Structure formats: C-alpha cells, structure tokens
Length: 469
Image 1 (cartoon, rainbow, N blue to C red):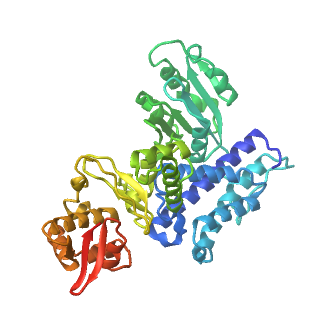
Image 2 (cartoon, rainbow, N blue to C red):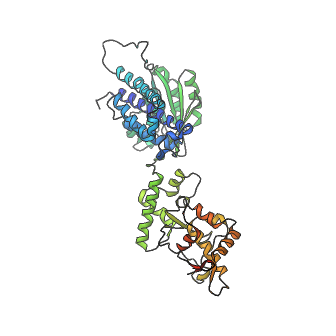
Image 3 (cartoon, one colour):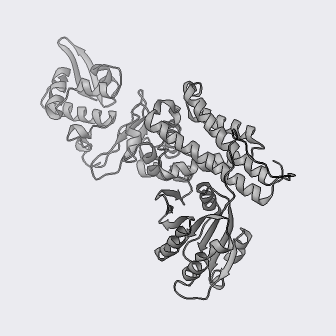
C-alpha cells in the first residue's frame, strides 16, 4: 500500500470502520427479516450481540486496511459477503443495492480524504452530480487515565463511531504514580497533562481544559469524554451547548459504553477478546476426538463430563459451557451431547452423581458405570419419570429394570415383549415405540432390544420373549 501521511492514514482508518459497521448492521437487519439469506453456517450466530459485532467489524476493518484502492476494497467486501450470504441473495437485486451503498460509502469517505492530502494547484469544487466530502472537521479525545484506560483496539472502535478523524488526544493523570504509562501513551500520540495527587484531580483538570477546547481547536466537531466519573456530565453539557457532538465514554465491568449525548444512541464494545467462533458441526467433531483419545488413554468407555470440559479447555483454550451457550442459548453443557444422540450417549446414574458420556456405537454399547458395587442387581437407578429418559442408554436402563421386575417370579426368567411394552406405558405414560421414533433410530422395538447388551431376545410360538443376559 502506498505511503500515506498520518492524517490520511487516520481518515482512511475511520472510513474503513464506518464501512465495516454498515456491513455488520446490514447483516443484523437481514438476520431479523430474512434469515434465509444468510449462509447456513452463520445463520444461528447472534450477530446482534455486541461481542459478535465487535469481532466482525474488527476483521473487516483489518482486511480493508491492506486494500490499495477503492476497487480492491470493494473486492474484499464482496468476498466477505459471499462467505456470509447465500449465493441466491448474492445474485439478487437486493444485493446489488447493498453493494452500491458500500461503494458509495467507500467513494465518499476515502476518495475525499486522499484529495484533501494531495497537492493540487487549486481547491476542487464538487459539481452538482458529485458527492461532496464532509465539511472539514476533527474529533478530540479527552482521557482520564486514572479512571479509565483505553487500549488500541478500543481507540479503533471509537474511530469507527466518529464521523471525523480523531486528531487530538489528551490524557490526564498524575504520571508520577502511573509507572511507565506516560511513555506508552506518549508513543500512541497523546498529549500528556500532569496533575498533582488528590481525589478527582484528573477529572477537574480535564473539565477545565475541555470547557475551552473549542476555542483552541475551532474545527473540532466531536469530543470523546472518556471517564467513568459521572461528574463530567457538566463538561459534556457545556461542549454540547457550543454545538459539538459529545460522546461520553465509560467502562462497565468488561464493556466500554459510548453514549452520543446529542442522539442518545448507545454503542457497546466488549473488552473480552473473543476467539474464532467454532461452528457447531466442528464442535461435535472436536468433542468426539477428545472422548476417543481419553478412552484410549484410560481404557474406560465412559468419560466424566467434567473431564471432557477440562480437556476441551486445555486443548482449545475455551470454556465448553460458554461455547455451548453461544450455539444453544439457555442450555447446559450436557445438552450438546443430548442434541446428537447418534454421536453420543449420556448417562447420569442418579440426580446427585456426575454425568458420564461415551461415543454411540451400535455394535458395542458399553455398560454404564456402577456406583454401588456391593449390590450389582440394584446398582443402576432406572429413570423415575419420562423426562429423565434423555438418551438411548437411559431407555435401555428403564427396560432392563422392567424386565427384571417382570421376570422375578418367572420359571424361565423371560417375559413376552408385549408385556414389557404395556408396563413401560404404565410407568412412563408413553408408548415405547414412540420413544424409539423420537430418537430417530429408524428401527422397530425388537431390533432395538437386539442391540442392547443387557437384554436377550428370542422367538417363541406366541411371540417374542425378552430376558436379562
């Protein structure tokens, strides 16, 4: 990319952020009104949440910065849109309107910035058919470092909000007590103003300097007042009374909140660094690989859910329940395994015990872990109600318990299949054949029993009989 002056680089950076934010907001609007236009891989991603917006805007802005001209920027934007949106929408008139708007933003914000910094024999006057560049103006950032510290990423977020380049940055603090922060902020282009120690010294100095900032910088159009101290509201009112747009910037737990005092609009920026969002299908593959490796390492078929969570964190640097919550809001970690019954089997011996998970294999289904070894006949707790049957393993345990109870007084220790079905319906209020259909097995009741390692099925004159192995 050709060398640019600091002013031009700042203006282009702000323009890139504006275009990125427009694409992000458009994606949110499409998801609300026409989710079918979004590629299936990203259709369930909560783009409206500030964290996801921040990640997308950051990636777009970073990609746009390497563009050498407007044409290459538009090519980059189109590549991203082709990834996020379905091909049918890319070919539609609606997409043409969207792309034309992006091009308009690129030409109106980047081209004027370059022309203002190029050598020209005389000022250019826009014709009636041209888009006039924004009026000459700058934005100013006032920062109480003792109260709030901005990262470089947060500054880029503020640049994206501003309609003018942030050319003046002033930081207030008792620098003697800030270690090497003075060198850091000086290197980032801040003017440093030292204040003596004392409560609210930085705020008071910032209010004094800020109240007359428009006199020293008559081209200032926007002011960012960065402090979590609400006492600076008076400064914001004073600046707004002189025609400036004031953005009140404050920190709230792990977020930066920006309030436009003129419009009342609130923008949010997450301070938590988000890693790449793992697609749901990829997450399932990762979990299966972790379980298989742990099975091979320990020679145990059933793996504790807590162990899987720890392995996931160690291997991918992410908290499993947080990742699951992004894909399945308001759910627990175990729900990701229940959602895929053809990949996983979930077992919880009792309400107070830990949850165990194994891989679903039709040929060899491992016996669930036994908690009470002293009494093997009663070691497995059968589901007490229908809502506790959440996996094929739960279903097998329920049937084993019924067969055991029904064959207690039988000479040959077997019972007709129809009797098992009737007893299941009596205890759980639902036909067992319907339960099997709910698990999408695509097989009948006898076929399912044949796949159960704990049960034995044989053909008799009057029908199928089942017994315990």
